Structure formats: structure tokens, C-alpha cells
Image (cartoon, rainbow, N blue to C red; front, side, top):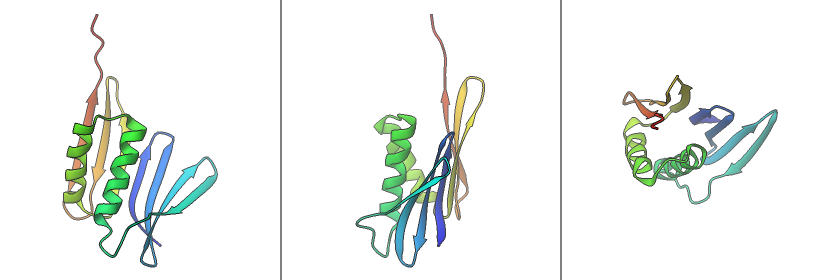
Length: 115
């Protein structure tokens, strides 16, 4: 098994692994591990994995579709293996994307209270 994407967002930890030609999604929940094979992934699994990663990022972080489109485009450029982590700061959440072949990227979400 070879990890192609590892996502850690607070309590959420998901991983996409290549296992003998099949792509499996592995979610770590507490001490339990939930596994499922991604449907419809062929030999060129890039689009399939990126679609699933973006969907789960959107679900976990409640990101708008326009932002998800930009994230999807950037993930395709970054390539595999890919590590995605969430870092919390005072008034911002920073999602860091560390790519395998084409560098890194960040998505910065700033919070501001206006009264």
C-alpha cells in the first residue's frame, strides 16, 4: 500500500492509498479505521482521487464551490503524493497543500467580526 493523499483537518484524518492497482479511501476515526474502494478509478486515477479529495474538503470545511474549483485545479498541478493539513491561527485557518512534484500551496481563510 502506498499513500497518495493524506489529509489532516483537526479531528478528521483521511487517506487515499494505492493498493495493488486499486485506490482505497481510509478514514481514521478515533481508534477505528474505515476503508472503502473508490469506484470508477482506472489506471489514471488522478482525476478520480482529486474529485474525492475536493468533495471531502468541501464537506469538512464548508467551502464554496468557487473556492473548491480553484483548489481542484491546484491539486492537479501539485501532483502526488500530497499532504493536506489545517493550521489554526488567531483569526485565520490555513490549509496547507504539500505536493509531490510541483511545490506547495496554501488556502487562507480569514475571520473578521464586524459590528
